[in-house]
Image 1 (spheres, helix red, strand yellow):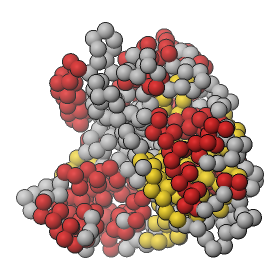
Image 2: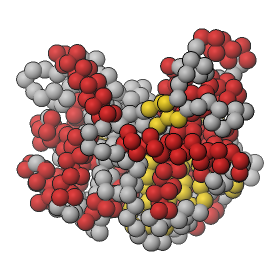
Image 3: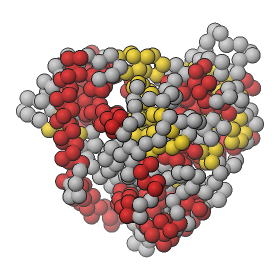
Image 4: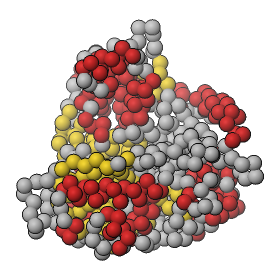
Length: 579
């Protein structure tokens, strides 16, 4: 179902040119129509995925999934093109003939196995009932064991590329997920002709031709200095994995903002656009948002804060930063080294607490006041002195992406008493995500990569208390991207470059991007008080996150074994490997 909002400007005219940006998120896809001359957002629409996140069983209901799985349905993504794009055009009242380019962005690493023509194995009769045939969403974390082996072997062999990824390849990235497919369902792996990021697959749907972008290849596909990991290394992981990169990934890479093709007749019919319209190279939702927030210069750290947070940062020099997700030459904009870090859960943590920790009387109070639960808890805790709740939490409810790179870690909350109130836990969770971000900032600066400005995009920038907490915890101002749909606007900016309206992404960002500088300033007294809480967070971080025999790992194994033994009988037919 698509919802649209009309944003037409009285300044638009028949001579104006426009682009369309389409942002594919975790639960929905959003399209926005943008004026090329100044970045004015003319209209937008959102389509909620019918299947959302597939976590418990496949859509047929017959095949259950093990713990830590997260899949998606490719048809949900095509439905965004069929529904949200035409609705956004209608809301903008912009004729398709005036749209000169379209670009997309995607959550990453969201990756899927396809046939040679791009048909997802999940949509074939032969493999529809096989979990490993389905696209693995970014937060599919059950490949942690494969990631551990990838990292151990890379360090054992002193592979040069491992330090470009902070010393650890994530369970979220392409190789761990692909190795999991090979080891757990080799028939699906054998049938997989192309292993492709959804960011590139959706462009394939628009242009009819496969393309690969430098961003996902670099950050998620271990493509460094012009090549993938060697066949010797991959074969040491598993003999049948040796040719993985050469046969399933290898393809010429396209620069961000470049034109990779034109809309086919079929894609034009889906979207309501004109066949032949320029299509830009695919991109990642976080990285594409940098120009929308005018955060493309060295030192500007952009945090795209939603269900999770991705941190992207440009720098003019290359450094090894422990625990980051990666550094790629031209990974965000040409002419700069693009760094990425992140937190696997942020908004998801707050939503979890609202589902689990709010008593009935709070719900009644919120309903009576006509406010949502976020507003209620924020109001109740906003004036509390820093530290008055006596709590510190670790923000690992969905594992740790940076700087520990361990998705088998889990959340911790200490300091509970019989007097602890729901709003105090809520505030402690807000603070925990800020502390996690400070760990990332300190990792960058400790490695000689300066952070000169902290900019926030994404839905969570609307929470004023959260933004002030970040300013206080980080001891620095927080700037806000002006657009409420930074990735979609960023995609539209890249579309303008692909269509030839601007020579490069930097110049397009200057004209089309918008930011509110220093919207929140740190309070010196609160910042000093947060230093004490952050010291406690760091102590917990090091205690629960470092070492070889972690308590949190043991608890995860106990949980998974209990859940698997309780569901294995109906999880998969006995004549083939279980998911």
